Length: 220
Image 1 (cartoon, one colour):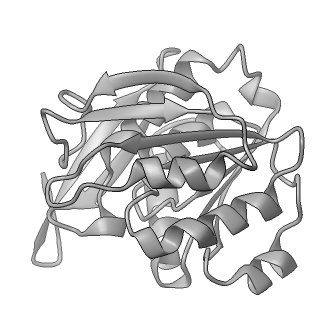
Image 2 (spheres, rainbow, N blue to C red):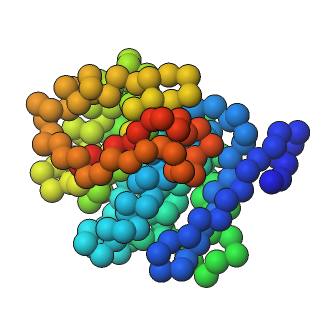
């Protein structure tokens, strides 16, 4: 446990299956974009287990909605060829700091960049990215606010081509909110073929925001 200014911060060193580690830190009660949610822990472990099958060492990966302390995105930095962690402009400084902190005291020199990608500003996204730029798109616990579901869909449709792999992990409930995952599934289904890769209890996920009776599902 450490201190950032007058607010407590938690630091975790997380291992990969090959023995490498990375660091993640977050402010206690930090809020939506400043907390590592259970789906991100689930995604990180999934990528680690599937790294050989997915040939991640040759993949360019983009994460949507990284927030400031993406467990999955930072793990991907050690597993993939190149990684772009994206979110709104206002969290970019903290996201860059998290990337720098993650690989301190390691021999790793991952190619990880923080970039602005705001789902509600598709015009900017179209100037900063191109379809198929990433081999893989990941997103964790992005289905939260209902009004962002269609902008997220439009962002995915722009970023992806027929060969893009998309992995999405989401909780069925949060400490103070239950997202409408079923509605987002309906929004996606006309455009994407969806497969459930795994489903697990949130209990023991490692997240400070787990709901013990809740579940998390990872889909592709």
